[in-house]
Amino acid sequence: MKKITAAIFIAFLIISINAIAQTFFTRNGRITFFSKAPIENIEANNNEVTSILDTQKGEFVFAVLIKSFKFQKALMEEHFNENYMESNTFPKANFKGTITDLSKINFSKEGYYPVTVKGDLTIHGVTKTIEVPGTITVSQGKINAHSEFSVKVKDYNIKIPAIVINNIAETLDITVDCKYEPYKKN
Amino acid sequence: MKKKLISIVISVFITTVSFAQDTTDISKLLEAQLKAEDQNKTQYITATFKTTRLINGHSVENTAKGVLDLKIDHRFDPIGGSSGGAYNFFGLDHATMRLGFDYGLTNRLMIGIGRSTEGKIFDGFFKLKILRQATGKNAMPVTVSYVPTIAVISFRNATIYSNFSRRLNFTNQLIIGRKFTEGLSLQTMPTIVHRNYPVDNGPQNVFAIGVGGRQKLSKRTSFNVEYYYQLPAYKVPGTYNSFSVGFDIETGSHVFQVHLTNSTGMTESSFIPQTIHSWGKGEFSLGFNISRVFTIGKKHNKTW
Image (cartoon, helix red, strand yellow):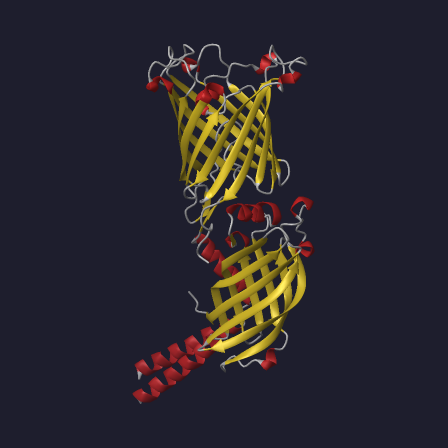
């Protein structure tokens, strides 16, 4: 009798773990951007990206703290926050999107899946719908998401003065790398 | 039997809780997560001022670690008064200057040296951020910096400067500053200037309270004010309090500061106790500071 109870308990537990595991989470996601211009190249890196992935609905949400982007030069970082991103007024960039070809992915099976994600990207208070290619890798109960795409600075109402037109590119290359783990409620 | 029941109830409960999560909106989940994280993070306030000087004196700002800041400062003669007017091209005929370097040893400690025309003064200082204005976990309303400065008068005069210690002036300054809004920053600077051998018949110790601030006019320009009030009991006779208004223009890695001031000295022991010109008599000068920064240290952030 005891064994049966234990078995029932374990069965329920497994079911519940599976149920929880459809929400995946990271707070150490990484986003880099690269600006290639005639005078200088600028690279910035943010290792504190928070993101949640709902594997059932194929939904992603991202929150990116602008002040967490680190640059090679302190002055670049200051200008990025003060003059371009106005991070006091717009402290975060957000993305909310869905995987358009969700049926191709089996999240419970290890593998590598090329996907397309479509959603709303909000930077500098401006929201644009974007569609970007990416890959999803499922391995050992964890999910890696990777994407490379580019955004036009002008689209997000970020003005580059003529004097630095040769220092800052009009289009930035963005790389997203997130390693998701099953979400555990604190 | 009871135990069994309890375990079944617990299992059902866990399952229900987890299924309940299915309907959770992940956007809301993310928001809750961020809110929790914000409370555990300290966010330091940056860019309280454009550069390490307000006008003549220090601002609460430091250069970042590994950043060298070349300072080229000029003060012309007064626009009005006896050395000004059209004959002297409104003071532009003659200028004094200070050439200096500031360098950030860490993000909180900066050192600097300089050489001024007036009195052939060499100066050296360090600026330590004791407190940093921040929000979040370790919230702090103000930034507090300590700036001790030593100035050596190298002007040749064997009668006055009969020994080396007579050439030394020391300044101890606290700067308490706050960025109130994106555009408005204010600071106050209680200061003691100690002169080993005052040649102006003034006291050895001059106490002064400085106040100053900036209001941004656009992203890259700001309007600045700086005033040093010498406490009357310690004031040097025949001098005026230093008052300056200025304008900062930032272009990439340069900051240009253009100002009108009644002081011609550019170190604390000069402009606080030894400002001999008066705004009331039209004796204010045009001046400018040029700041050019170079990143010479290791990368600003090595975590990546």
